[in-house]
Image (cartoon, rainbow, N blue to C red; front, side, top):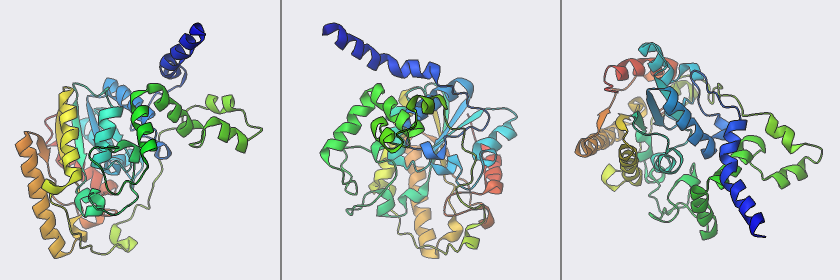
Length: 338
């Protein structure tokens, strides 16, 4: 009995590392996480470790870094590398990674990012309303609930019961559980193997595993046209001041965690499409931006807040199109100390 328990414990400890030796993962130029695996945090952790070994600088952020309206050859990191003349910057953007989720991602699934120059993007859109800030008292759907704090601070919009929250906390601490989740995400349509087999009684799970990881994502998530051609009108966002913002507080925590691991952090504030704001909302946005800059200065963090791109270089409130990324890369590279 004791030997059996020891064998099971040994398997639980060894399986994730052994799987890395079996599962081929050689990200090429302009690699970005497959969109359909945005919730595969075990794979993201592996991406960060490989990127830290192969690139000088790491670029972390949400779908703005990932590139919602562009192919992977049109992203911010692509143009930064093109202008730098080498593969210097790695795209570690994750779709939907608002600052609260990004903090959890860095804290629990990016421990391999150490002693590196890090370009950390902050999307001001996350402060555009209490709902986006997750400080509203109303229940709402949001991306990456497994990455947010499960208990402290208590997020009012997050209504999961206590048991699933405990499960999330345990999974963060047990690599085997995170790896098992990776298998479900990458190979079994986000299902456990018994459920997957019941729906596909003639399929061979081992054959599915042998298929390997999906390739780097190179699809457009949205049509690459300016926002005004898509019927997006001017918006009157109410905005949340950074001093009262949950997203802003967690972003500060993300910087602290990265710096605590010996990384040199440089923050990109934006980009943000001011052209789509009403005059009143634009004035409030400038107040928010000034407060964000003041907070970064007080924290001793270097940053760059780019001027607005041309209106036709945005796909929506915060995502540039390819010409916008190229213009932003030129401006950003001249300010980077990394």
